[in-house]
Amino acid sequence: MVWGISVSDHLGIKIYSTENQRNAISEYAEQHGYDVVASYIDAGKSGLSLKGRDALKQLLSDALATPRAFDAILVLDVSRWGRFQNPDQAAHYEFLCRQAGVRVVYCGEPFGEDVAPITTIVKHLKRVMASEYSRELSAKLSRAHRQQAQLGFRQGGGLLYGFRRLLVDAERKPRQLLKGGEYKALSNDKVVVVPGPAEELEVIRRIFRLYTRDKLSIYEITRRLLKAGVRGYGSKALSETTIRRILASELCLRRMTYNVTTKRLQGHAIKNPESTWTRVQASEPIVSPAQFHKAQERLAVGNRPWDREKILASLKRLLEKNGHLSQRLLNSTEGAPSADTVDRHFGSLCAAYAAAGYDPTARMFFGNNGRYWTEGAVIMGLRQLHAAKGRISNRLIERCPDLPCPRHIRLRFGSLANALRKAGLHAPTHSEIQRDGWKRRKDDGGDDYILGVRWSDAELLQALRHLHAKYGYVTQNLLDSDEHTPGAYHFVKRFSSFTQARTLAKLPLETHSQIMLRACQRKREGKSVSRQRRHPGQRPKLGYRTDDLLLGLKRLVEREGAISARLINDDPGLPWSATVAHHFGKLSKAYRLLGLVRLEAKPARFGLPRSK
Image (cartoon, rainbow, N blue to C red):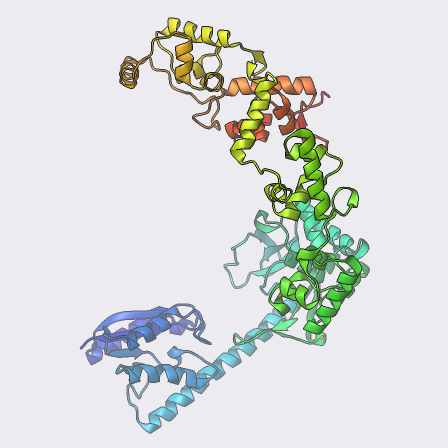
């Protein structure tokens, strides 16, 4: 016969450690001829519920499975199923195993596997005793924790921002500050809470000032601290929950508070009357008591219970006052429910808006200088601009006084292309926009300039012939690596293709096979020229040389005093700003390579650092 073994550790009792249980069951199995084939161990798990006891869940699953690998389950005593507050729960699990045909044998009980009526009574009595043991132990631990809290020692829970845990010995002499995940090793040692770094304490004082003096909401305080770069534990931004805990915690008065809530036997947390709280004054407060009490008064108003009727009334008042509703408005308005509260009661903000009689899609659109723009006015302005310029672009819209900004048009119509279609105008594709821009630059003579230097067609072809005479061949990699010749991209752009450029330069044309054979020969001889990266972050297979681009950008910033994407686009001696960004990864990286700094301007500008 094949047998199974189930071991469960509960409450960390030394005499019932998993090793002791394993040895006791093994001895019993050897004496009675059982063969142990599997062990199910829940080490260090609470027996108050099935939560977290994966081994017991697996045991029940294996016992009910077909086929199964064992015929019996060996258990040390009745309490090993668990110290459930309902004794019938442990009996239910035993019943499931027996109903599936699996015998349950108790190794440490006098009745073994007997199922007589008197045995059933004894089992039930022992299950009740096991649950009563948990209740008594919980009460003893609660009294011990409260006694330690009265002495000023920390009793667990989340640590508040701005404070640290200090390990002290039995005589309260400091040992060390505990880091995250570190705990005391000796039972005689204790842990107390001490103020953290001065900069964190100053952040706490700033939070109280913003909340009590400036009357900012917790949402606005969170945004302001995030913008200021204030970080909490793990370099994470301070959340609204953390700021609310700071405002409500009496630690800011340097007063340890314990027994505010009670949660016993894995039940729900219950808030205790304030008369039963344990308060211990540690040192000087971080904020003044008057400021702290003002914060509690505001929090009490914001923490009042909300129901659907009160929320609807508040939403209607906000709608009547502001003309619209939004998540930001709810979070930033004093006395109004937060967006999370509204979402929790109605399922979504849209459902709450509909119940309050507000349609977010029907809001009025305001553009430049707060002027309201009708759809017809925008369409008429687009038609007039197209008639005057022959085309439509974001830059033309920005410069047109008879139109709102492009962002407003995108919000109103979904996209600029949709607005053009409604106006009866052609909506160009991205390729058409690029080709049109290149054509205008070429008509303006921009293609004649390569990084600020004018190159005629004859000069480009002469440079091509010079390279061929010097090396005996011409390749795109050779052009890109030569310091005195524009890159291959410029030849392709000027002459449509590299082959066409070779033809116009009257260089010998080669077949693809001849080109590959000569390339292999140069590689064997070690004379091949490959495209090299000028800096570690440069992307491969790009038509522009890094040094040439940086030189052109430097000339631009020295001439204009500043640099931006728009200035790059306006310079005929530079490629499009998107090309520069693609070459370096982003424009700011190119600016850093040039040693440029952010200038105080809006929109953002970069330029040379000021001389001191």
